[in-house]
Image (cartoon, rainbow, N blue to C red; front, side, top):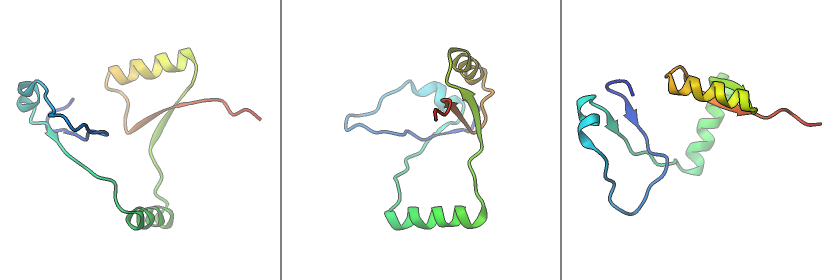
Length: 92
């Protein structure tokens, strides 16, 4: 992870969290907590996104062995920007 980055855990546990501190300290990384907003807050956020045409920036990979391999390689090299999605073909 790049220096001065932020880590947002997407889950929690009731036990104490322990991890090797020094690597995170030396890169000045921050652990940040975030909770999901209320139903009305999420509704306002979605209405704002629709009103202003806000769309996610994603990179799609096919849900195949080759696509998974490419996505994994790009992720390990740090080349994925924003969000990577494995996309299954549509079946009609």
